[in-house]
Image (tube, rainbow, N blue to C red; front, side, top):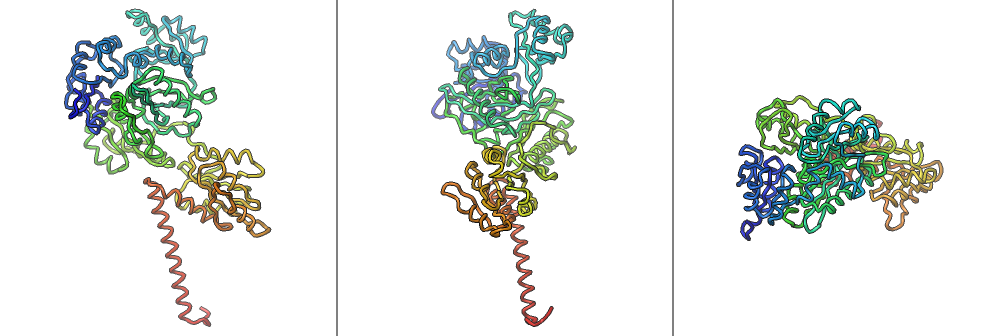
Length: 595
C-alpha cells in the first residue's frame, strides 16, 4: 500500500493489452501496478510483478484484490456494476466510479445521458420486441442498427437490419428472445443508420478534483467493425467541428464525473447542425488513443494513471504535426520476433508495440506508431502499414494502407498532378498573367520536393475570397504563403494582415514603372504586419526562401529538406567555380583573343 518509499499501488481489473501498456507508464512514475488477471497467460501478467488470477465477476475476489491496492481501475468495462457499487460502499477508491462507468457498460444508459446533456445523438429507441423494431424502422427509415446494450465491442453486439422482415428472424430474433428471458427488464437498443463520412474519436482525461484535458480529435478507420488505423489529428476536419467535439467530450467527462481516460467515439456528419454525432463511450485507455504513446507529450496510459491517482494531468500537445497508428492482427506469421529485423530495417521510423499475445487470426496482437509532418501523411500511413504487414505476414507482401474517403486536407486552387503530399506552401497571385513570373517559385518548390497549391486570389477583384484564403490557410495545413502582385500590389500585405503564417511577397513587373511600384508597395508595410519581400520578379528566391522556412523545423522531413537545400547551394557553388575557371582561362589567353 501507499508509503513514502514505494508510493501508491494501483490495481487494474483485467489483464489485457491495456493493462500491459499501463505498466511502463507506472514504472516511469515510480508507482506499483498490480493486475487482477483472468488467467496466468494473459497479456499483462508478464509486465507486472503482482498479477493474481481471479474471476472479475466474483465479488469476494474483487474485495481481496482491492484490499491490497490504493485505487482500483480497469482494463475493460465488464465488471458487474453492482459489484463496483458494493466496493465503493465499503470505501474502495473505484475509478472511474460505477455511476460513471455504467455509461460505458450500458449503451441505453449512455444514450439517455447524451440526450439529457443536449449533445448530438442519432435517432434511437429502446425496443423489446421485433414489432418495436419494425415500428422504429418505419419511423426513421431502413436500414437500422440493432445493438445489445451490454457486452459488445469491436463490432460484436451490433447488427445491421436492412428491412422489416429481418427483424423477426435470424440474429435479431435470437437477441429479442435472449433479452426477454433475462432477469433485467431492459430491452435492446435500436439506432438509425447514421449517414456519416467517417468515424472520429475525442479523447479526454479527468481527475476527481475536476481537472480535465483533451487530445486532438482523431480519425478512426474501421475494417469489419474493428479499428484498423488512427490518424491524429483527423485530417481535413473543420476546426469548428473539432472544437465542438472536444467540448462535447469534456462536458460528458465533467457531467458524468468520469475519472481517468475516456474515449468518445463519434460519427462525422457533414451537413448537420453540429457536424458530428456521439456513437459510443469507453472509460479507459482506448485503441483510438494508442497514437499518443509516441505522438503526444503525455500518452494516454500515463495520463490515466495520473488521473486515477488525482495527480495533476500532463500536457496533451502533439510532438509532431501528424501521427499514424496501425493495428496488426493475427495472420500467417506465428513468430512475431522473427519478423522484427525485417520490419525494423524496412521502416526504421516505425515504433512497434507488441501485446505479448499468442497469434490467432483476427486477434489484436500489437500496433505500430509513426509520427512526422502533416505533408508526410501519405508516407506515414505507408510506413505504418508496411511495418505492421511484415509483422503480421512474416514477409513483405507490399501491403497498402486501407483506402479511405475522409475528405483529406482541403486545398485551394490547383496542385501538380504528380504531387502526393499535402500542400505546405500557398502560391497566389493577383492575375493569371502573373504566372509567367510566379512559375519560377513553383519550379523551385518542385525541385526541392515541397508540395504546394496555386491559384489567383486578387486583393481588389476578389476581396472576400482573398480574406477567406488568408484566414483559413493555416487551418488547411499551409505553412508559408508566397504572394505575387504587380502595380498597387496589395495582395501580400492584405494576406499578412489576416494570417499567422509567414508571407513572402514577389513584386511583379508590369509594363509601366518596371515593377518599382510593386516593390515599394509590398516593402512599405506598417509595423506589426510583416511581409518578407524578394527582388522584382524574384519568384525563384521566394520559393527557395519558403523552403528554408520549412527546413528550419526539427522534424525528419525538415532535415531532409535542409539536405536538399544544401545540395542546391553546392550546385550554385560549383556553377560559380566553373564560371570563375572559364574567366581565368579567358584572361590567360589575353583580352584580344577571340576564343
